[in-house]
Every structure is written in structure tokens, then in C-alpha cells.
Length: 278
Ligand SMILES: [Zn+2]
Figure 1 (cartoon, rainbow, N blue to C red):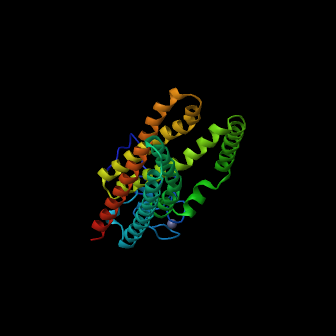
Figure 2: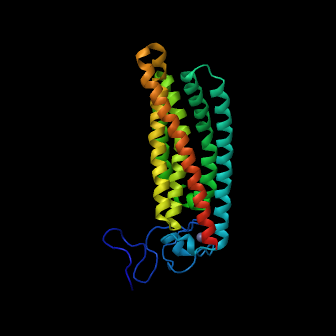
Figure 3: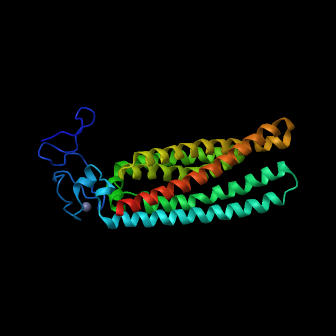
């Protein structure tokens, strides 16, 4: 028996006879695998247990799976390109029809922000098609039991009542916060999922790239939030105009850069899938 992973750091999910001892569910159908051989197959659906226990590398997985992922990657690329072209054309119209440079920066930012608000459609498509690793049955088996549901219910109740208080007393700030969250969280989550997927290829370089994009989306999201919060100040006092304008330009450049970097990453991912299929 060879031990490939340290038993001190994490308890092994299998015992000396290669039987699953941890509370692990089949990633395809959600069946509890405890007692099964890690080298065997799920008793319900026949999916290899090792995939649910250790995770698998895409380079060893069957062609149909990689084909499916590549199809999904292309859907995300085309969606991203379409959004990019629409935003670019809209920005061109808005910027050329503005009276001066400051007006152009404002209009450019607003158009760009509208595009960012549309990006969750693509990010969510990407998450569902590309980075969702487990089946619905897996989540049902893992989370749809009483203990977890009660805990989730209490948390949701607390968050909702806090949100209600915030929405009542700080309506403007709350609205801006919701919009910023909507604009950035799905894309950041998608990039994180993509990073995990790339680690499965395995392609560590692309995984770190996706992780870095996810972090920069967070930073730019927080800056956008800050800008939208402070925006009313510019109308009140002229002292705020210059710093807010620089922040606006910084955030705009950030979103354009992130859009281009994400598209480039997706193209590389697509090429990676092609290379595996060969
Ligand atoms: Zn199964």
C-alpha cells in the first residue's frame, strides 16, 4: 500500500483496504459512497468512485466530457464577444456625441457600467455549463437534510432582516450595493470555478490566471461601488469632481482590461480543450 498524501494533514478518505470511510457522495447521483471501494464504481449509477473521492484529471477523462466542456467554452466566448461588440458600439456613439472630454468620460463610464450589469448573464451561463462539477442529485443528497436546512433558514432570515433595515434607512447606498454585487459577484465566482477547472486539466498557469482575474474583479467591483456611492458628492461640491473623475477613469479602464483579459483567457481555455482532445 502506497501513501501518496500525508495522513497527518488531512484524514484519508479511504482505509487501508481502499474502502471509502469518509462521508462522500457520488458526484453524479449523490449516493453515499461510504463502504465502497475507491477503485470501484458507484452502486447506483456506475460512475467511477475515484472521481468522487479524489477528483479526476481532464486529460484522463473521456472525450465526450471534454467535448461538452469545449462546447460550453465556445458558448461563453461567443456571448462575451457579442456583449463586447455591443458595448463598444454603444460607447462609440455615446462618446462621439458628447460635448467635452469630461462629458465623454461620464457617458463612457455609464455605457460601460450598463455592459458590466449585463455580464452576469454570461457568467451564469458559464457557471452552469462549464464549471458546475456536481449533479443536482449530489447537492440534494448533501444539503437537503434537516440540520443543514434549519441552519440555512436561520442565516437567510438574519441576512434578510439586516437587508430590510439597510434598505429602509440607507436606500441609496443599499441600491448601489445591490447593483455592484450583482455586477461583480457572478463573474468573480465564474472565474474561481474556471480556476478550479483548469487545475483539473491540469494547467496550473491558467488556473492562477483565472484566480488573478477573479481577484481583480473584486477590487474593481469595490472601486465601482465606492465611486457610485460618492457620485452624488460631485454635484454638491466641486472639490470632489477631480478625484471622482480619476476614479471613474480608473474603474472604466479596469473593466475594459478585465473584459479583454477574460476573453483571452477563455480562448486559451478553448485551445487547451482542443489540445486534450487530440
Ligand atoms: Zn452515482
